[in-house]
Amino acid sequence: MSQSFYITTAISYVNAKPHIGHAYEFIASDAIARFKRMMGMKVFFLSGVDEHSAKVEKAAAAQGLPPREYCDQMSDVFRDVHARLGNQLDDFIRTSEPRHHAATKEMLRRSYENGDIYKAKYAGWYDLTAEAFVPETDLPEPDKRKNIEWIEEENYFFKLSNYTERLKEHFNAHPEFVQPDMYRNEMLALLDRGLQDISISRSTTRWGIPLPWDETHVSYVWFDALTNYLTGVGFVHDMAMYETFWPADAHIIGKDINRFHSVFWPAMLMSAGLPLPRQVFVHGFINHKGEKMSKSIGNVVDPLSLIENYGCDPLRYFLLREIAFGRDGDYSEDSLITRYNADLANDLGNLFSRVLSMIKKYRDCVVPNGAVDDSLRGVIDRVQTQYAEAMNQFMLHQALVAIWELVGRANQYVVENEPWALAKDEAKADRLDAVLFNLAEALRRTAIMVYPFMPSKAMEMLGDLGLPREGAPMLNQLDADACSGVTVTPGRSLFPRLEREEAK
Image (cartoon, rainbow, N blue to C red):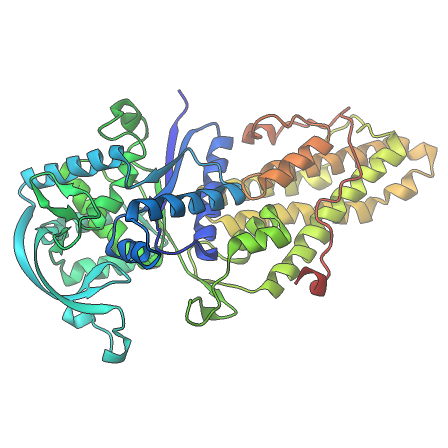
Protein backbone atom coordinates (compact mmCIF):
# COMPACT_ATOMS: atom_id res chain seq x y z
CA MET A 1 0.00 0.00 0.00
CA SER A 2 1.23 3.48 -0.78
CA GLN A 3 1.97 5.86 2.08
CA SER A 4 -1.07 7.83 3.24
CA PHE A 5 -1.37 11.61 3.54
CA TYR A 6 -4.27 13.34 5.29
CA ILE A 7 -4.80 17.08 4.80
CA THR A 8 -7.63 19.32 6.00
CA THR A 9 -8.79 22.89 5.64
CA ALA A 10 -10.49 24.58 8.55
CA ILE A 11 -14.23 24.08 8.39
CA SER A 12 -16.09 27.30 7.60
CA TYR A 13 -18.80 28.99 9.59
CA VAL A 14 -22.01 29.11 7.57
CA ASN A 15 -23.17 32.45 8.97
CA ALA A 16 -21.89 34.18 5.79
CA LYS A 17 -20.98 33.30 2.21
CA PRO A 18 -17.37 32.39 1.36
CA HIS A 19 -14.95 35.16 0.38
CA ILE A 20 -11.54 35.20 -1.27
CA GLY A 21 -9.83 34.29 2.03
CA HIS A 22 -11.75 31.01 2.08
CA ALA A 23 -10.83 30.43 -1.56
CA TYR A 24 -7.14 30.97 -0.82
CA GLU A 25 -7.06 28.35 1.91
CA PHE A 26 -9.10 25.90 -0.15
CA ILE A 27 -6.95 26.05 -3.29
CA ALA A 28 -3.68 26.03 -1.37
CA SER A 29 -4.76 22.85 0.40
CA ASP A 30 -5.92 21.36 -2.90
CA ALA A 31 -2.55 22.12 -4.53
CA ILE A 32 -0.74 20.31 -1.71
CA ALA A 33 -3.12 17.35 -1.93
CA ARG A 34 -2.64 17.10 -5.70
CA PHE A 35 1.13 17.18 -5.33
CA LYS A 36 1.04 14.37 -2.78
CA ARG A 37 -1.12 12.31 -5.15
CA MET A 38 1.49 12.94 -7.86
CA MET A 39 4.02 11.38 -5.49
CA GLY A 40 1.92 8.20 -5.51
CA MET A 41 0.59 8.71 -1.96
CA LYS A 42 -2.86 7.64 -0.80
CA VAL A 43 -4.33 11.08 -0.11
CA PHE A 44 -7.42 12.09 1.82
CA PHE A 45 -8.44 15.76 1.49
CA LEU A 46 -11.19 17.04 3.81
CA SER A 47 -13.08 20.31 4.00
CA GLY A 48 -16.54 21.21 5.21
CA VAL A 49 -18.72 23.53 7.26
CA ASP A 50 -19.23 24.31 10.93
CA GLU A 51 -22.96 24.53 11.52
CA HIS A 52 -23.36 24.67 15.31
CA SER A 53 -22.93 28.08 16.91
CA ALA A 54 -24.90 31.02 18.24
CA LYS A 55 -23.82 33.00 15.18
CA VAL A 56 -25.36 30.43 12.85
CA GLU A 57 -28.55 30.31 14.88
CA LYS A 58 -28.85 34.11 14.67
CA ALA A 59 -28.08 34.14 10.93
CA ALA A 60 -30.83 31.59 10.34
CA ALA A 61 -33.30 33.58 12.44
CA ALA A 62 -32.45 36.74 10.49
CA GLN A 63 -33.61 34.94 7.33
CA GLY A 64 -36.69 33.47 8.97
CA LEU A 65 -35.41 29.91 8.61
CA PRO A 66 -34.95 27.00 11.01
CA PRO A 67 -31.20 26.38 11.61
CA ARG A 68 -31.29 23.04 9.75
CA GLU A 69 -32.86 24.50 6.61
CA TYR A 70 -30.50 27.47 6.67
CA CYS A 71 -27.47 25.19 7.06
CA ASP A 72 -28.65 22.97 4.20
CA GLN A 73 -28.66 26.00 1.91
CA MET A 74 -25.29 27.35 3.07
CA SER A 75 -23.64 23.93 2.88
CA ASP A 76 -24.57 23.80 -0.80
CA VAL A 77 -23.02 27.25 -1.30
CA PHE A 78 -19.67 26.10 0.10
CA ARG A 79 -19.76 22.84 -1.84
CA ASP A 80 -20.33 24.84 -5.02
CA VAL A 81 -17.38 27.12 -4.28
CA HIS A 82 -15.10 24.09 -3.93
CA ALA A 83 -16.35 22.69 -7.24
CA ARG A 84 -15.96 26.02 -9.04
CA LEU A 85 -12.42 26.39 -7.67
CA GLY A 86 -11.51 22.97 -9.07
CA ASN A 87 -10.80 21.41 -5.68
CA GLN A 88 -10.57 17.62 -5.56
CA LEU A 89 -12.11 16.85 -2.17
CA ASP A 90 -12.35 13.33 -0.81
CA ASP A 91 -15.05 14.33 1.65
CA PHE A 92 -17.07 17.34 2.74
CA ILE A 93 -18.01 17.23 6.40
CA ARG A 94 -21.05 18.87 7.97
CA THR A 95 -21.09 19.06 11.75
CA SER A 96 -24.85 18.40 11.77
CA GLU A 97 -24.33 14.88 10.38
CA PRO A 98 -25.10 11.88 12.64
CA ARG A 99 -21.58 10.48 12.14
CA HIS A 100 -20.15 13.71 13.54
CA HIS A 101 -22.52 13.71 16.51
CA ALA A 102 -21.26 10.23 17.36
CA ALA A 103 -17.57 11.20 17.06
CA THR A 104 -18.01 14.36 19.13
CA LYS A 105 -19.87 12.54 21.89
CA GLU A 106 -17.11 9.92 22.01
CA MET A 107 -14.44 12.64 22.36
CA LEU A 108 -16.45 14.33 25.12
CA ARG A 109 -17.09 11.03 26.89
CA ARG A 110 -13.39 10.11 26.90
CA SER A 111 -12.35 13.48 28.26
CA TYR A 112 -15.12 13.48 30.88
CA GLU A 113 -14.21 9.99 32.09
CA ASN A 114 -10.57 11.09 32.23
CA GLY A 115 -11.58 13.73 34.77
CA ASP A 116 -10.84 16.68 32.51
CA ILE A 117 -14.37 18.13 32.34
CA TYR A 118 -16.17 19.74 35.28
CA LYS A 119 -19.22 21.96 35.86
CA ALA A 120 -18.90 25.53 37.11
CA LYS A 121 -20.56 28.93 36.94
CA TYR A 122 -19.13 31.40 34.44
CA ALA A 123 -19.49 35.15 34.54
CA GLY A 124 -17.52 37.11 32.02
CA TRP A 125 -17.17 38.58 28.55
CA TYR A 126 -18.07 36.60 25.45
CA ASP A 127 -17.04 37.50 21.88
CA LEU A 128 -19.92 36.64 19.55
CA THR A 129 -17.75 37.01 16.44
CA ALA A 130 -14.89 34.78 17.57
CA GLU A 131 -17.18 32.43 19.54
CA ALA A 132 -14.77 32.71 22.45
CA PHE A 133 -14.74 33.87 26.06
CA VAL A 134 -12.52 36.91 26.54
CA PRO A 135 -10.33 37.45 29.63
CA GLU A 136 -10.42 40.94 31.14
CA THR A 137 -6.79 41.44 30.13
CA ASP A 138 -7.67 40.88 26.44
CA LEU A 139 -10.72 43.15 26.25
CA PRO A 140 -10.57 45.81 23.52
CA GLU A 141 -11.45 49.46 24.17
CA PRO A 142 -15.14 50.06 25.03
CA ASP A 143 -15.90 51.54 21.60
CA LYS A 144 -14.66 48.33 19.95
CA ARG A 145 -16.82 45.91 21.95
CA LYS A 146 -19.69 45.85 19.47
CA ASN A 147 -19.93 42.04 19.40
CA ILE A 148 -18.76 41.39 22.96
CA GLU A 149 -21.35 40.89 25.69
CA TRP A 150 -21.36 40.02 29.39
CA ILE A 151 -22.85 36.62 30.17
CA GLU A 152 -23.47 34.66 33.35
CA GLU A 153 -24.32 30.96 33.08
CA GLU A 154 -23.44 27.52 34.36
CA ASN A 155 -21.22 25.65 31.90
CA TYR A 156 -19.00 22.62 31.69
CA PHE A 157 -15.29 23.42 31.49
CA PHE A 158 -12.30 21.59 30.04
CA LYS A 159 -9.13 21.50 32.19
CA LEU A 160 -6.91 23.04 29.55
CA SER A 161 -4.62 24.33 32.30
CA ASN A 162 -3.62 20.73 33.10
CA TYR A 163 -1.93 20.41 29.71
CA THR A 164 0.42 23.39 29.71
CA GLU A 165 3.57 21.41 30.44
CA ARG A 166 2.71 18.47 28.18
CA LEU A 167 2.09 20.88 25.30
CA LYS A 168 5.40 22.63 25.93
CA GLU A 169 7.15 19.27 25.81
CA HIS A 170 5.44 18.42 22.54
CA PHE A 171 6.34 21.75 20.95
CA ASN A 172 9.97 21.35 21.99
CA ALA A 173 10.18 17.74 20.80
CA HIS A 174 8.47 18.55 17.47
CA PRO A 175 9.56 21.98 16.19
CA GLU A 176 7.73 21.25 12.93
CA PHE A 177 4.39 20.87 14.77
CA VAL A 178 3.31 24.48 14.10
CA GLN A 179 4.65 26.31 11.07
CA PRO A 180 5.79 28.88 10.03
CA ASP A 181 8.01 29.57 13.05
CA MET A 182 6.46 32.96 13.85
CA TYR A 183 3.14 31.24 14.60
CA ARG A 184 4.89 28.53 16.60
CA ASN A 185 6.57 31.22 18.68
CA GLU A 186 3.19 32.86 19.35
CA MET A 187 1.90 29.59 20.78
CA LEU A 188 5.02 29.07 22.89
CA ALA A 189 4.51 32.55 24.35
CA LEU A 190 0.89 31.66 25.11
CA LEU A 191 2.01 28.51 26.90
CA ASP A 192 4.61 30.46 28.87
CA ARG A 193 1.86 32.75 30.19
CA GLY A 194 -0.07 29.70 31.39
CA LEU A 195 -3.35 28.29 30.11
CA GLN A 196 -6.79 28.82 31.57
CA ASP A 197 -9.62 26.29 31.55
CA ILE A 198 -12.15 26.81 28.77
CA SER A 199 -15.93 26.51 28.59
CA ILE A 200 -17.06 23.62 26.42
CA SER A 201 -20.86 23.79 26.75
CA ARG A 202 -23.84 26.14 26.56
CA SER A 203 -27.28 25.67 28.11
CA THR A 204 -28.88 28.67 26.39
CA THR A 205 -29.16 27.10 22.94
CA ARG A 206 -30.53 23.82 21.59
CA TRP A 207 -28.77 24.01 18.20
CA GLY A 208 -25.81 21.75 18.80
CA ILE A 209 -24.68 18.34 20.01
CA PRO A 210 -26.01 17.41 23.48
CA LEU A 211 -23.40 16.35 26.04
CA PRO A 212 -23.61 12.57 26.52
CA TRP A 213 -23.93 12.86 30.33
CA ASP A 214 -26.10 16.01 30.47
CA GLU A 215 -28.45 16.71 27.58
CA THR A 216 -29.49 20.07 29.01
CA HIS A 217 -26.16 21.33 27.67
CA VAL A 218 -24.87 21.27 24.09
CA SER A 219 -21.22 21.12 23.08
CA TYR A 220 -19.78 24.58 22.62
CA VAL A 221 -17.77 25.24 19.45
CA TRP A 222 -14.34 23.72 19.83
CA PHE A 223 -14.98 20.14 20.93
CA ASP A 224 -17.67 20.02 18.26
CA ALA A 225 -15.82 21.90 15.50
CA LEU A 226 -12.34 20.44 15.89
CA THR A 227 -13.55 16.85 16.14
CA ASN A 228 -14.59 17.11 12.48
CA TYR A 229 -11.03 16.15 11.55
CA LEU A 230 -11.57 12.79 13.24
CA THR A 231 -15.08 12.31 11.89
CA GLY A 232 -13.92 12.85 8.31
CA VAL A 233 -11.64 9.82 8.42
CA GLY A 234 -14.01 7.47 10.17
CA PHE A 235 -13.52 7.92 13.92
CA VAL A 236 -16.19 5.78 15.63
CA HIS A 237 -18.08 4.86 12.43
CA ASP A 238 -15.20 3.43 10.31
CA MET A 239 -12.20 2.65 12.47
CA ALA A 240 -10.31 0.88 9.66
CA MET A 241 -10.34 4.12 7.71
CA TYR A 242 -9.37 6.04 10.85
CA GLU A 243 -6.37 3.74 11.38
CA THR A 244 -5.28 4.37 7.77
CA PHE A 245 -5.31 8.17 7.88
CA TRP A 246 -5.05 9.41 11.46
CA PRO A 247 -3.06 11.29 12.67
CA ALA A 248 -3.57 14.09 10.15
CA ASP A 249 -0.44 15.14 8.31
CA ALA A 250 -1.48 18.78 7.90
CA HIS A 251 -4.20 21.06 9.18
CA ILE A 252 -4.18 24.17 6.95
CA ILE A 253 -5.67 27.09 8.90
CA GLY A 254 -5.80 30.88 9.11
CA LYS A 255 -3.81 32.73 11.75
CA ASP A 256 -6.93 33.86 13.63
CA ILE A 257 -7.67 30.29 14.78
CA ASN A 258 -4.10 29.24 15.53
CA ARG A 259 -4.48 28.81 19.31
CA PHE A 260 -7.59 26.68 18.90
CA HIS A 261 -5.81 24.27 16.56
CA SER A 262 -2.31 24.40 18.03
CA VAL A 263 -3.17 24.44 21.75
CA PHE A 264 -6.83 23.54 22.42
CA TRP A 265 -6.99 20.71 19.87
CA PRO A 266 -3.83 18.81 20.91
CA ALA A 267 -4.85 19.13 24.56
CA MET A 268 -8.26 17.65 23.76
CA LEU A 269 -6.64 14.79 21.88
CA MET A 270 -4.23 14.16 24.76
CA SER A 271 -7.21 14.05 27.14
CA ALA A 272 -9.01 11.57 24.88
CA GLY A 273 -5.90 9.41 24.50
CA LEU A 274 -5.58 9.97 20.75
CA PRO A 275 -2.50 10.76 18.61
CA LEU A 276 -1.80 14.39 17.75
CA PRO A 277 -1.73 15.74 14.17
CA ARG A 278 1.75 15.94 12.67
CA GLN A 279 1.53 19.58 11.66
CA VAL A 280 -0.61 22.70 11.85
CA PHE A 281 0.34 25.02 8.99
CA VAL A 282 -0.83 28.60 9.47
CA HIS A 283 -1.42 31.07 6.65
CA GLY A 284 -1.98 34.82 6.81
CA PHE A 285 -4.84 37.06 5.74
CA ILE A 286 -5.59 38.52 2.32
CA ASN A 287 -6.06 42.28 2.36
CA HIS A 288 -7.78 44.22 -0.40
CA LYS A 289 -5.63 47.05 -1.74
CA GLY A 290 -3.82 47.20 1.58
CA GLU A 291 -6.99 47.21 3.72
CA LYS A 292 -8.43 44.38 5.79
CA MET A 293 -11.56 43.05 4.11
CA SER A 294 -14.75 43.98 5.90
CA LYS A 295 -18.47 43.96 5.14
CA SER A 296 -18.82 47.41 6.70
CA ILE A 297 -16.14 48.84 4.41
CA GLY A 298 -17.67 47.01 1.46
CA ASN A 299 -14.42 45.58 0.11
CA VAL A 300 -15.11 41.84 0.55
CA VAL A 301 -14.14 40.00 -2.67
CA ASP A 302 -16.38 37.26 -4.07
CA PRO A 303 -14.22 34.48 -5.57
CA LEU A 304 -17.03 33.31 -7.86
CA SER A 305 -17.15 36.66 -9.66
CA LEU A 306 -13.39 36.42 -10.25
CA ILE A 307 -13.76 32.92 -11.67
CA GLU A 308 -16.44 34.19 -14.05
CA ASN A 309 -14.18 37.02 -15.23
CA TYR A 310 -10.78 35.33 -15.34
CA GLY A 311 -11.28 31.59 -15.04
CA CYS A 312 -10.57 29.16 -12.22
CA ASP A 313 -6.94 28.30 -13.00
CA PRO A 314 -5.71 31.89 -13.46
CA LEU A 315 -7.23 32.78 -10.08
CA ARG A 316 -5.55 29.77 -8.47
CA TYR A 317 -2.23 30.74 -10.04
CA PHE A 318 -2.48 34.38 -9.01
CA LEU A 319 -3.28 33.75 -5.34
CA LEU A 320 -0.63 31.06 -4.88
CA ARG A 321 2.07 32.99 -6.76
CA GLU A 322 1.33 36.47 -5.46
CA ILE A 323 1.20 35.61 -1.75
CA ALA A 324 3.95 33.84 0.16
CA PHE A 325 2.12 30.97 1.82
CA GLY A 326 2.20 31.58 5.56
CA ARG A 327 2.32 35.39 5.27
CA ASP A 328 -0.28 38.09 4.85
CA GLY A 329 -0.87 39.14 1.27
CA ASP A 330 -2.70 41.70 -0.79
CA TYR A 331 -5.29 41.37 -3.52
CA SER A 332 -6.29 43.88 -6.16
CA GLU A 333 -7.84 43.32 -9.54
CA ASP A 334 -5.08 45.39 -11.17
CA SER A 335 -2.39 43.10 -9.76
CA LEU A 336 -4.33 40.03 -10.92
CA ILE A 337 -4.55 41.36 -14.49
CA THR A 338 -0.89 42.40 -14.48
CA ARG A 339 0.34 38.99 -13.35
CA TYR A 340 -2.05 37.19 -15.68
CA ASN A 341 -0.74 39.05 -18.72
CA ALA A 342 2.93 38.87 -17.72
CA ASP A 343 3.22 35.30 -16.43
CA LEU A 344 0.40 33.41 -18.09
CA ALA A 345 -0.39 35.16 -21.38
CA ASN A 346 3.15 36.29 -22.25
CA ASP A 347 5.61 33.88 -20.61
CA LEU A 348 3.78 30.55 -20.74
CA GLY A 349 0.90 31.08 -23.18
CA ASN A 350 2.99 32.61 -25.94
CA LEU A 351 5.72 30.00 -25.51
CA PHE A 352 3.22 27.17 -25.77
CA SER A 353 1.51 28.55 -28.89
CA ARG A 354 4.81 29.41 -30.53
CA VAL A 355 6.43 26.02 -30.00
CA LEU A 356 3.44 23.98 -31.16
CA SER A 357 3.05 26.21 -34.22
CA MET A 358 6.69 25.64 -35.17
CA ILE A 359 6.34 21.87 -34.73
CA LYS A 360 3.34 21.98 -37.05
CA LYS A 361 5.06 24.20 -39.61
CA TYR A 362 8.44 22.49 -39.73
CA ARG A 363 7.66 18.85 -38.80
CA ASP A 364 3.99 18.35 -39.73
CA CYS A 365 2.88 18.30 -36.05
CA VAL A 366 5.18 15.42 -35.07
CA VAL A 367 7.80 16.03 -32.38
CA PRO A 368 11.18 14.72 -33.60
CA ASN A 369 13.10 12.12 -31.64
CA GLY A 370 15.74 13.59 -29.39
CA ALA A 371 17.40 13.98 -26.01
CA VAL A 372 17.62 16.93 -23.64
CA ASP A 373 20.45 19.36 -24.46
CA ASP A 374 23.16 19.95 -21.91
CA SER A 375 22.26 23.65 -22.06
CA LEU A 376 18.82 22.79 -20.65
CA ARG A 377 19.63 19.79 -18.49
CA GLY A 378 21.18 21.76 -15.64
CA VAL A 379 18.22 24.13 -15.41
CA ILE A 380 15.70 21.28 -15.58
CA ASP A 381 17.44 19.29 -12.85
CA ARG A 382 17.75 22.31 -10.58
CA VAL A 383 14.16 23.43 -11.14
CA GLN A 384 12.72 19.96 -10.49
CA THR A 385 14.70 19.67 -7.25
CA GLN A 386 13.70 23.13 -6.04
CA TYR A 387 10.09 22.49 -7.00
CA ALA A 388 9.86 19.23 -5.03
CA GLU A 389 11.57 20.74 -1.98
CA ALA A 390 9.29 23.78 -2.00
CA MET A 391 6.13 21.71 -2.39
CA ASN A 392 7.09 19.36 0.43
CA GLN A 393 7.60 22.39 2.68
CA PHE A 394 4.29 23.96 1.51
CA MET A 395 6.20 26.89 0.04
CA LEU A 396 3.81 27.09 -2.90
CA HIS A 397 4.94 30.47 -4.17
CA GLN A 398 8.56 29.27 -4.29
CA ALA A 399 7.53 26.21 -6.29
CA LEU A 400 5.93 28.50 -8.88
CA VAL A 401 9.02 30.69 -8.98
CA ALA A 402 11.05 27.56 -9.78
CA ILE A 403 8.66 26.49 -12.56
CA TRP A 404 8.86 29.94 -14.14
CA GLU A 405 12.65 29.69 -14.19
CA LEU A 406 12.21 26.80 -16.63
CA VAL A 407 9.60 28.77 -18.61
CA GLY A 408 12.01 31.69 -18.83
CA ARG A 409 14.89 29.44 -19.87
CA ALA A 410 12.73 27.86 -22.60
CA ASN A 411 11.84 31.30 -23.97
CA GLN A 412 15.52 32.19 -23.96
CA TYR A 413 16.32 28.89 -25.71
CA VAL A 414 14.01 29.89 -28.58
CA VAL A 415 15.84 33.18 -29.02
CA GLU A 416 19.27 31.53 -28.83
CA ASN A 417 18.53 28.81 -31.39
CA GLU A 418 16.22 30.65 -33.83
CA PRO A 419 14.31 27.63 -35.19
CA TRP A 420 12.97 29.75 -38.07
CA ALA A 421 16.54 30.30 -39.22
CA LEU A 422 17.49 26.62 -38.81
CA ALA A 423 14.49 25.65 -40.96
CA LYS A 424 15.95 27.55 -43.93
CA ASP A 425 19.11 25.39 -44.02
CA GLU A 426 18.71 21.67 -44.87
CA ALA A 427 22.16 21.00 -43.40
CA LYS A 428 20.83 22.03 -40.00
CA ALA A 429 17.78 19.73 -40.04
CA ASP A 430 19.17 17.60 -37.21
CA ARG A 431 19.73 20.66 -35.06
CA LEU A 432 16.18 21.86 -35.75
CA ASP A 433 14.89 18.43 -34.70
CA ALA A 434 16.83 18.68 -31.44
CA VAL A 435 15.61 22.21 -30.71
CA LEU A 436 11.95 21.33 -31.33
CA PHE A 437 12.20 18.23 -29.17
CA ASN A 438 13.81 20.19 -26.32
CA LEU A 439 11.14 22.85 -26.40
CA ALA A 440 8.35 20.25 -26.38
CA GLU A 441 10.07 18.49 -23.50
CA ALA A 442 10.38 21.73 -21.51
CA LEU A 443 6.65 22.32 -21.99
CA ARG A 444 5.79 18.76 -20.93
CA ARG A 445 7.74 19.10 -17.69
CA THR A 446 6.21 22.53 -17.06
CA ALA A 447 2.71 21.09 -17.51
CA ILE A 448 3.40 18.31 -15.00
CA MET A 449 4.83 20.65 -12.37
CA VAL A 450 2.10 23.25 -12.81
CA TYR A 451 -0.67 20.65 -12.45
CA PRO A 452 -1.31 21.14 -8.69
CA PHE A 453 -1.81 24.86 -9.29
CA MET A 454 -3.68 24.88 -12.59
CA PRO A 455 -5.00 21.34 -13.11
CA SER A 456 -7.29 22.08 -16.06
CA LYS A 457 -4.72 24.08 -18.00
CA ALA A 458 -2.03 21.51 -17.25
CA MET A 459 -4.17 18.73 -18.71
CA GLU A 460 -4.94 20.89 -21.76
CA MET A 461 -1.22 21.34 -22.29
CA LEU A 462 -0.49 17.64 -21.99
CA GLY A 463 -3.35 16.81 -24.36
CA ASP A 464 -2.18 19.30 -26.99
CA LEU A 465 1.32 17.86 -26.65
CA GLY A 466 -0.11 14.48 -27.69
CA LEU A 467 0.31 12.96 -24.23
CA PRO A 468 -2.24 10.98 -22.18
CA ARG A 469 -4.88 13.06 -20.41
CA GLU A 470 -6.40 10.28 -18.32
CA GLY A 471 -5.65 10.63 -14.62
CA ALA A 472 -3.27 13.01 -12.90
CA PRO A 473 0.36 13.17 -14.02
CA MET A 474 2.90 11.56 -11.69
CA LEU A 475 6.19 13.04 -10.53
CA ASN A 476 8.13 10.02 -11.75
CA GLN A 477 7.14 11.05 -15.28
CA LEU A 478 9.29 14.17 -15.02
CA ASP A 479 12.56 12.39 -15.75
CA ALA A 480 11.40 10.50 -18.84
CA ASP A 481 12.11 12.13 -22.21
CA ALA A 482 8.59 11.33 -23.37
CA CYS A 483 7.94 13.72 -26.24
CA SER A 484 9.72 11.85 -29.06
CA GLY A 485 7.31 11.01 -31.87
CA VAL A 486 4.14 12.42 -30.33
CA THR A 487 1.68 14.36 -32.49
CA VAL A 488 0.83 17.83 -31.21
CA THR A 489 -2.39 19.79 -31.70
CA PRO A 490 -1.57 23.48 -32.13
CA GLY A 491 -4.06 26.31 -32.21
CA ARG A 492 -5.19 26.61 -28.59
CA SER A 493 -4.72 29.96 -26.86
CA LEU A 494 -4.10 28.90 -23.28
CA PHE A 495 -4.32 32.38 -21.81
CA PRO A 496 -5.72 35.04 -24.16
CA ARG A 497 -4.27 38.40 -23.20
CA LEU A 498 -6.55 40.62 -21.11
CA GLU A 499 -7.14 44.23 -22.00
CA ARG A 500 -7.42 46.03 -18.69
CA GLU A 501 -10.60 47.98 -19.30
CA GLU A 502 -12.30 45.04 -21.02
CA ALA A 503 -11.39 42.72 -18.14
CA LYS A 504 -12.90 45.05 -15.58
